[in-house]
Image (tube, rainbow, N blue to C red; front, side, top):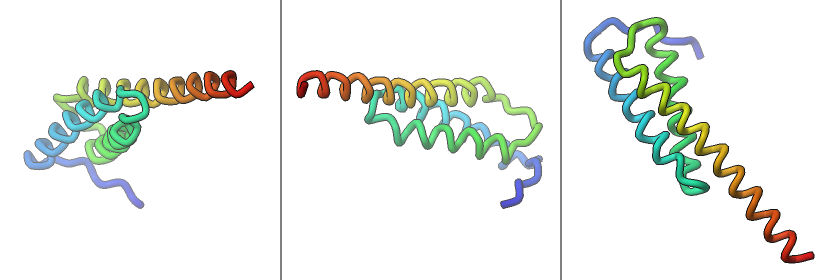
Length: 95
């Protein structure tokens, strides 16, 4: 799929800002261990979609976009860590 050209209309800018805020919100929900995994995946997907759509254009909600990615990745790591710890506990109980 070819990347979209950089947006220049005000409607596109509004969409970029809204998607940036949605990425942040999904990233925060993604911090929930295990239950937040789908939200974290959506946040990471939104991050890359916004980067593709916006290109090098200035995004006033860039901070929210960056924090959305950071919280989503942290949530994914936390989910993997919790799953790993629970698996170790279950294995130790069986042995």
